[in-house]
Amino acid sequence: MSTIDAETLLKNASSSGRRRSLTELVIQALSDKIERGEYTPGEKLPTEPELCTEYGVSRTVIREAVASLKLGRRLIARHGVGVFVAEADAHSSANSFLDTSTLNNSMYVLELRIGVETEAAAFAAIRRTTQHLDALKQVYARMDNLNPDDDAECARADFEFHLAVATCSGNPHFTSILRSLGQEITIDLRLKHAKADAKERRIYIKRIQREHSAILDAIEKQDEGAARRAMRRHLNESLERYHNLSNASTTEGS
Image (tube, rainbow, N blue to C red; front, side, top):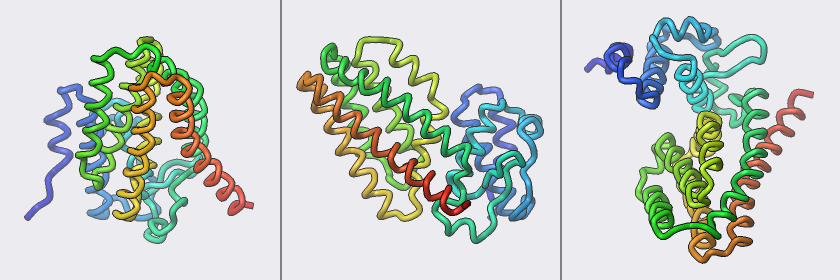
């Protein structure tokens, strides 16, 4: 049985303008080429403009697809050189796919999110309406019902929870800031959700949901201080992990 021709699907879907579906199709198309040996281990990927022309999509779609494959350890970036198909032994290294640029950008985005989202959570506790609280609970419940093996969908649900918290704040600028960072946040969340081991993924999602639960509980109780602390703890954990990865990368490179 032949595999789905993702490139054909991409051409048929290119007029839809739905960035998420186009991104998934580009991911599949690039993955198919790697599997077929059209892109061999160690080979440099075509440039962004070349990929945009080949698939008829925007640079944003290509960047999201490449970022996803980097997080999936299929591709690896070499700073100032380009993006390459990962060697077979690179798949066994937990940190080899994390180029310095991606790692630093994730840390910078998290630093900004800590400043923005801790205050958004605090204002959410003060201002949330019954309607907004119900919507937040629905987003929280949705993540409980997701397949933990679908890291892309889990990452989207995670992002939707944070957007719902921002909406509860009653300040549209909090939501606007998160949406403007959507691509970077999604890359970060895909990194955190894309655990190699199924058991590790499930443990991670349960822990994340406990942290989300603490945020939700504080907002429901209208406890401003608790909401701020819960959100800060939630985001700080990720920042600390990136600092550890950065330090390990620096040590290995020295």
